[in-house]
Length: 311
Length: 189
Image 1 (cartoon, rainbow over the protein chains, first blue to last red):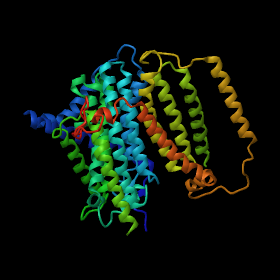
Image 2: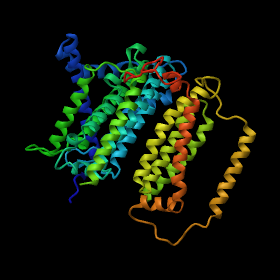
Image 3: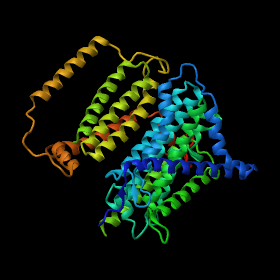
Image 4: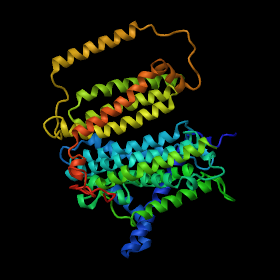
């Protein structure tokens, strides 16, 4: 069997980062368009909005607070973008990957565990009550989504008998994993939306606590934090493609085009969810996570394990 | 390991030791916790350099999650409640110092006096399996006994410290159909 993905020269990481930036811009613009449609604003203005907001935040003077723990604050704020960049290293783009790592699946999981620390650090660093409340909300949510997410990731590893993302893609040459593990895909999607502090899981950035974790962020700090938060959403959408949607496989178009197309579709769905599902309180989601999603994930894993054993 | 790999390995080792020591230098629970997290991440990266891909990444994953949760508890329970203010990370200094030195001496003596195996060729492939065999094979029974004991300890600890048990929720005879909770859960129980 030939290697399903080829590791490219590390200098291509720059292209990967640019691709991430473009997808972040697409996500921001799409979110703006949906907001404009919901609130009756202008769609053209929402297309300009990502660039305009970037320019505004770059010019804005960086604010600080009394007795802020600046070191931890900056680590948390910049870390989201770093986590997103580290995540996409193991995501194959067509047949190319930056890091053909034997434990790529676990690598992705470890990077989303970093988000636990980073969001809380942003909440802690500003020495502000509302931000800290937001940080605690995120950790409460994290305990509820992370275990189901792990069970969903395990499903793909059982079915492909490998932790390598390239092998997981190769194992889907006949049947995409989304077809016979829809529950795992659903739980994975919930996990991605949750670790991106997005939509129904955005209570740690909630308006009821004055913007929560981001309450005291301004200027370039705010720009980098929110870029990173969109970055992990994009990375999560991109990783769904090799895990569940057959990677770059598809007719007519080249593999990279299929990877990109599928990523944009998944990303658009994640962005769209934001305005369709109401905010979920972390303590309520705890019960959903542990009483529904973990058993559902375990049953999905059991089913796949039985199929694999009896194949 | 290549030369660059070896340099990285030693830099990571120094990072692990220094950030471990920083746990006691800093004056905030948050910084102490995340200094410890950095120490663990450095060790995880060292494992990656030793080709222990899975073990290295899982170390980073588990330790970052653990430290994120630990920070919450440290700030809740340690110090002048809660530890939101700057505070010293050391207490009972003389006893701690003696304990630390004695422990260090014991461990160092153990390292120096252990007859380490030599001459056996290092495994080149499946190093994770080789490490697992070397660590666990002769002690598999102990390892197998250990895990149910740990789970039982966790369950016992949680049920002893539980604020509201099932008798509070479902009544003395567990006769209530729906639980009586001050904060209803998300699945409508």
